[in-house]
Amino acid sequence: MKKLLKTFILLLLLINYSCKAQQLVQTPNDISKLKTNEQQFLNKPLKSLLKEIRPEIKTAFATTDSPSFFTFKFLTPSEINQKVVGRKDISFYVYVKEPVDWSDDKRPKGKEYIWTAQDIEKYGNLTVIRIKVIERIEN
Image 1 (cartoon, helix red, strand yellow):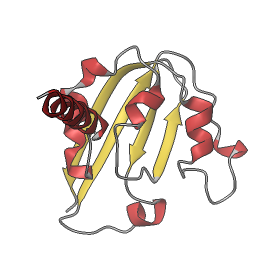
Image 2 (spheres, rainbow, N blue to C red):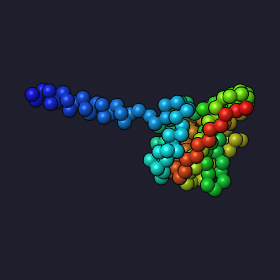
Image 3 (cartoon, rainbow, N blue to C red):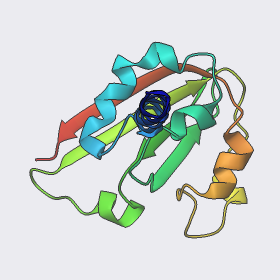
Image 4 (cartoon, rainbow, N blue to C red):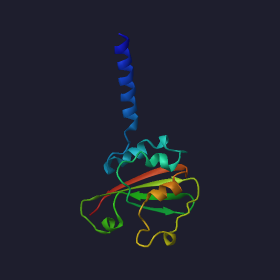
């Protein structure tokens, strides 16, 4: 009986861990879940929000006004420039409390808008204050 109880507890812990490990956004079409669960990310670091997004963020740029915000897309800059009728264009905006030090001039030429691991290191500790999601169909 003890062995059965130990096995059950171990299985329960593994299931619980597996459920928590699943990311909130599995596909670009799930991005609206960020807005639905916005309260979960407010006043937390940007990196905690980015961990919940499984599809690769390919393009990003920041606005340094007050409040500062990042715009993220799942398309490369060249894919964005190609107009495809009927394609869903998904963008999400993350407003942060601190000013953002973003300059296209300081970024590598031709890769000004590519989101990298170095960007996560540099901007990951900024505090999220708002999330906005925009989805539109290209025509």
